[in-house]
Length: 303
Ligand code: AMP
Image (cartoon, rainbow, N blue to C red; front, side, top):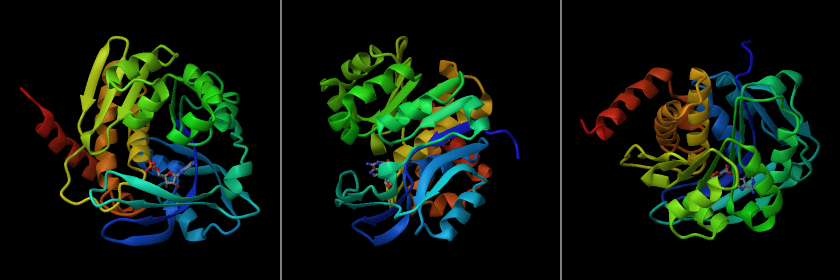
């Protein structure tokens, strides 16, 4: 197998999701599942996560099908992390019904030796303490990105600020950016976050796309418009996975490369929400991605 270019650490969950159209129980989810699947189209990706003894073997086969390197996947006694949520009619708002940490509650991510030298690292949504534990194991990575959520902003702000000060790019959604910064205006929110250390901030705006902020300016990428969205769960993780995969494939980390990688993140995420769990991504090829990427360029090109 080729050396791992991108390491992703995050949660692995069995999700129960209710949308206005359907209810699915105990389907494969978690931030690291979506992010690794999204990245796998572009780069050799190593997964760091934990599952319980009850984790279904067919789900491991799904990871294998994406060609994900599984040396960092731990199996612990106990039950796999469970999460359930329900979406409102417009699919933009969702309510968490239950979170059962199970084996995620005692997880200690340990990086296999070769992962510690990987050039790209994505700290997907997981507690900031665990993100810091991973950061302490890597040897001068080229580019590190972290994601977070409202829960950690509320209950673990101190370690989260440590993570933020140590990474190159922070990604979070707009309500989280407001919560973290105390600013309602997203430009002011991004400026405050940039002042805490990272060179870049990406604020995700769901079906309205994502914004990149750096000291030198702003960039906007749309979401690819879809007529039917079946399940938006994990869209942000799939976006970040596609983004990090595309960035790792090229190897450059300048602002032009970051902008281009964001357009790939947007395209991969648009496929992900067309079905539940990783189902649509499982039936996706690189040429499907390139085709939609061309259509996306045509949609957003002014000249
Ligand atoms: P997103 O739609 O981007 O918020 O991601 C949803 C995924 O995050 C689901 O597949 C869940 O399994 C996972 N998730 C939900 N809550 C947590 C949590 N507290 N920590 C880590 N992962 C979580």
